Image (cartoon, rainbow, N blue to C red):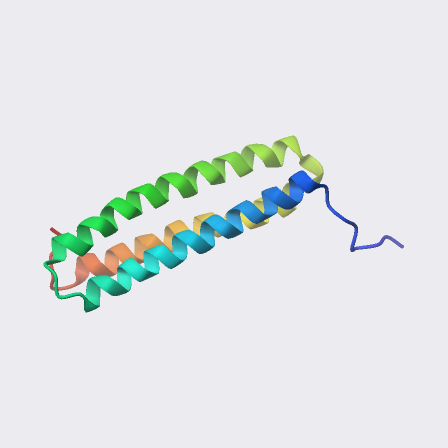
Length: 112
């Protein structure tokens, strides 16, 4: 019987942690900006402008990290499922930011 608690190589542990950190940081900052948009009394373009810039940067960062993990999953084929399972967090993060954007775009306030 195989031991399911085998220690993974250090590279794989790092590859599994990267998407968790990127997801967490990106999600927290995006959610804070989303909430600030609704509670701040500044003109919409000030908070919304930062939000749009952040969204573009977050798309790029999440996309680049996702592509990097996809490539790494082919390099470390024996851990491909583990790496890609964590990489899906980044796709979820992109979906959440799209939902936030659609909510803001549908509000009475204008983005600009």
